[in-house]
Length: 412
Image (cartoon, rainbow, N blue to C red; front, side, top):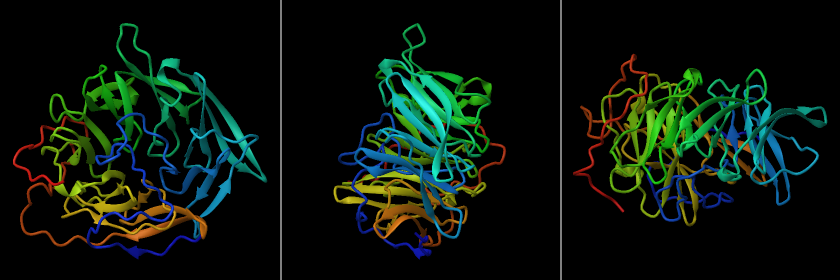
């Protein structure tokens, strides 16, 4: 159960090879054969607290599932089971908070129930937080937990609703943990919203992927939770394109997006408050594979070009991690530990990638990977790479302008 030593990554892409026990699934939003459709995002197999000190998952198998909390901030990673009086359902979600308690989200017919779990001697303590009623038309799995706020103390629920009374779609945002009392409705956003990415360090600005009307395009918007859910545009690449925000680095302003504006679904990047358009590097397309980002390096203040982004590359034979930087020249593969949870991991500010795993040899562990250094860039700013420092004042969400979609070399 001891965390692995820091290992160097591979230096060239030889195709994704699945780690033992990793499976072949990709994170939602893939762009290869068998990629899942863009819809409600299922709960990841393991979730981190905002500071990375804890993680949580549903452990066990079959009809014997139970919450499990991992402690990762000590010299040795260890797991604590948090079973209760009955097994959990497969669609139960868990989310660790910064104080070590684990938020559990259970779904019943027309209701979402929440509790905080914590070790209490040999037993599991449970503090009920109440529930949120959801319309039957939304479906059992439509309401989803958002990632914890950057301070790790609050959790929110996204609930697509039946409408606003005039035929329009509405999505409710509930504060379900960290409030003064029970679940609180804090905003209603016109349209059907999915996704959920924090744009700042305070937990005020939340990016959502919004569809204003059935069959219409999806556009990422910024929602101000301190102003009653005031909405402002974030991604506007082309009028009819579907433009989703996948990841954001509040320190540097780096945004990782997915859009079909180039003609097919592509992963691209831009800078929050930047003046340059979204770019879609050809290296982020791997023929015959689904490529999905899952973690972005924090702490790179005003250095979006140097932020490392971790990807899952999924093929029919398995899933493998890879790393890419906007200033870099390619998607570089890494070797995952046996039992890695595909699409799961986090970066340290120093650029070390932590990949959690569970295997017969180690029930709970994290492998620490040091990605290879990028080759030195030639003088100047190569097309489609660097963007230069971001002005410190440009911290508000603004629409990113249309990307250059012509004259590009296509692969695959």
